[in-house]
Amino acid sequence: MSEDTGLLDEKLLRLFDALYAARSVSRAAVQLGQAQPTVSIWLRRLREALGDPLFVRTESGMLPTPRADELVGTVRGALELLQKLAAPPPPYHPATDARRFRVCMTDASHVTLLPKLLTYVRAAAPLASVQVMRIGEDTGGLLQSGAADLALGLVPSLDAGFYQQALYTQDWVCLVRPGHPRLEAGLSRASYAARQST
Image 1 (spheres, one colour):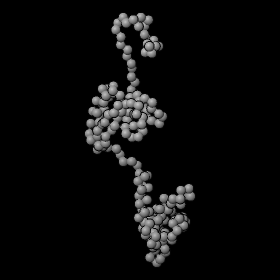
Image 2 (spheres, rainbow, N blue to C red):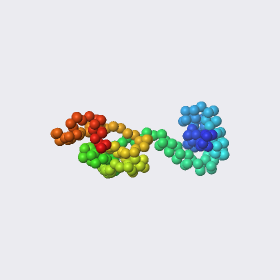
Image 3 (cartoon, one colour):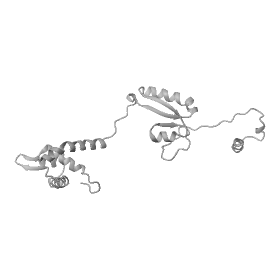
Image 4 (cartoon, rainbow, N blue to C red):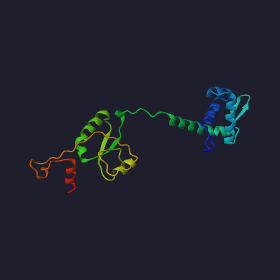
């Protein structure tokens, strides 16, 4: 029994299950890959933790007490849950995924990225669908709550704690007519920024 949590150790649960099935300390020890004295120590701890002899030695073997009969279903259910927790996640199969993916995008992304994204999703996950939402001040909250799955584009006032990755670089282009009076001295990044602030 764990002193920190008051919960039974998994090894004690496995001992209970093995003893209930084998009705023998020596056979349970072999099944668990432990020496018989070790299993006897575990059984003593299990009895102390549950306040019951649990298994009584008879000519027919170690027979469960009524308390053990009551607990066997709970113990086996707990072991099954622990096995599920420790199991690796099942492989992902996009062809059978019928989820709706909610993606926040800028207006520009609707034109440049969305057609390619939809083409890819239709080919890889034909049962899935894509719902598109506009990026705005609430996008961070939507991502945090799970109301949105992904954001493509610049998300304003995004707090720390989100995984972010640059997908591509973008250049800005300034178009002006020939002979524009503001270009008489040439156009540098500093002069362009100064023009934007006026």
